[in-house]
Length: 425
Image 1 (cartoon, one colour):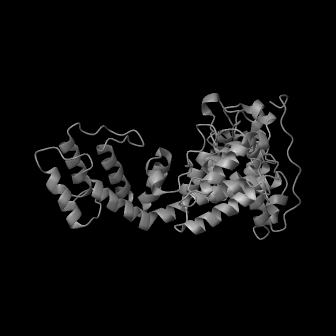
Image 2: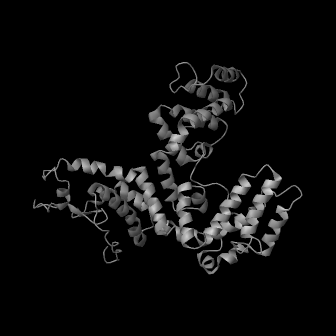
Image 3: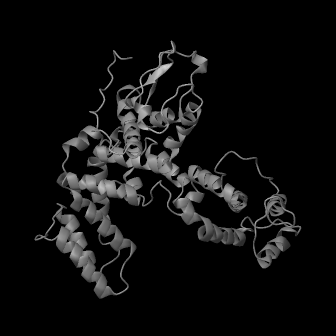
């Protein structure tokens, strides 16, 4: 819904892409940089461990559970192997023996400050090697890393994926200004909204083909006859001259698919790979920019922000402080809060507009200015000036949903706020 996050850059440029139809793009060769097969929204432990932002959030998640040493050890062992740290860290010793002993003493020695539990056999086998005079191999801790990875997967990672920390990671990726189609197609909740968008644009079959072709390649049948039957179903639906849902691929692609389906040993797993890359490139160039500007994407981001509780929690402090006010009203009638008139105290610091923004009557000194957490998030969502009002509508949707719960039967929705003009500033 928030296409303004960025104008999608493609090799052909936005103006050229706008002139091309889906049929035009499906007859072209796929670009060499097409779909790498991985979303920047990390979904596996292996992906999190190599992503600086995600691994930092995982560490925050593990600390209150007393499991932070597991991750810290894994990262230190990876540094010993030569991998760069995910955040600025003190350099490890150039002497590999000294560095290995320091890691062992920190995490596995008796009385270690950040002790990691592991079987005595694994720990002893590593200690024997690092106590020798010669330098240990770089991957000396690899068996213990494997043990730690299994503990993280079995005891913590599934809960991390359901936590506020993981939702914060999703928000950071999807508001980074560099959203790619892979970030949506490999993310279950984002895919739901993108599918709805393609349905509204009457091009859902293109997305369905990509999903089916990708699934065929990733999960090939072990039985050649069964694999061929599956491939023929896709061919008859999307490629055949009598296809029930023709997409418009050129004859060279159709002939290549036919040849790979009818191989001597059954269809190859990659028989739809090239066609899937072309379909993905067409969706990225023609539909992703419009989706990122659509109301559906805006709703998706609003749902993410609400789920993470980040924005709503940021208002709790102001709610708490309001309890110390000298103003009084009937505690037995919650509606009196909204119905009470303005107090004539002789001093007004400001007011709240229809989007929940505080407009101050007094302008603070420049060095005293502070942005609220809500403002900082909104600032990340947009480029300056004309796009900012759209981002604030995310906040309006959140506030409206909250008040509809607290007030019961909410009044009808107000009309969208007027876009501010240059005269307003």
